[in-house]
Length: 70
Ligand SMILES: [Zn+2]
Ligand SMILES: [Zn+2]
Image: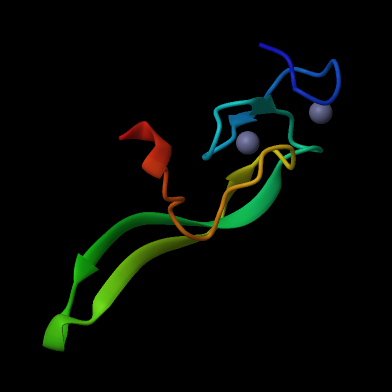
């Protein structure tokens, strides 16, 4: 598998969309692994600060409502 951006061998896959990227083209982006309710019903998130990101896709900070699916 080659990097999405160039012809080098890929070193990692984007956490968000699955595109493959080489070491030069891999970028970092905080990724939420899990959400849960903590003390006092405060929503908490398990976050990875520097997850692999392909720099192409655009992870949205909030889930997007898709009412047209109903
Ligand atoms: Zn590359
Ligand atoms: Zn991506």
